[in-house]
Image 1 (cartoon, rainbow, N blue to C red):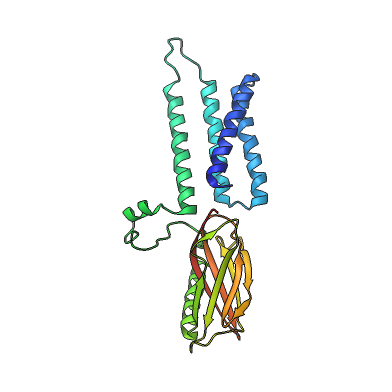
Image 2: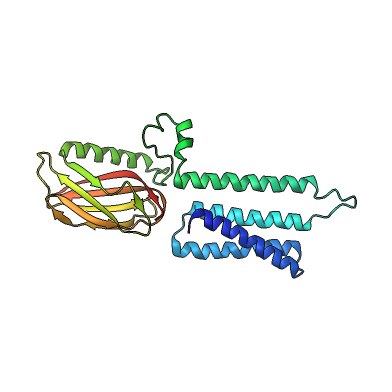
Length: 262
């Protein structure tokens, strides 16, 4: 399921539970506790089997619990005798949680899917003329090894330039979930001769701490052409890492790719 489906579906479930418990005569406090807790536990169980990232889990829990809190505040508020309605402080809290819902949902959506091209062209230079990746794949490191990781990537680029290999990759511009994505890697040496004894692996990455996803090895087809089928784990922005090993030499190439639904 997509992010919008799980967020909105869980929020609707919170509302249904809250209303149902109210009709059963349960107090506003316990209506909030139960209606917020049950969808949260369901989400945690779902995340175990579908490998949801921690940022997505946190935004879901925040939305579910905020929805239950707002409903409980409304239910527990007393009508004034003059019929003036809900107290202004309760209205302020409701507006706050609505803004929280919109802001958090926007952040998660942008981090996963990136900015829409029309919006990106307004804020980013040359975004209207070329592809700009505005999503966050999660591979950026912020620990003590961040500098060494960047240095390693620069060494990989220098090694590839030194070897002079010519690498062409087809089939990764329109990746989709739920289908067979046929990919091809054409590999030539510095003299333009096909390299038929290489081992080529492809894998998707978002967080280096979580390890690779959808790791495959491309078998040789003919004349330096290696073909295979990719099954993408989820929609959004990913790092597609291609690792090529040939006669003791090894290089890694990282590409930003966008994955859409079928």
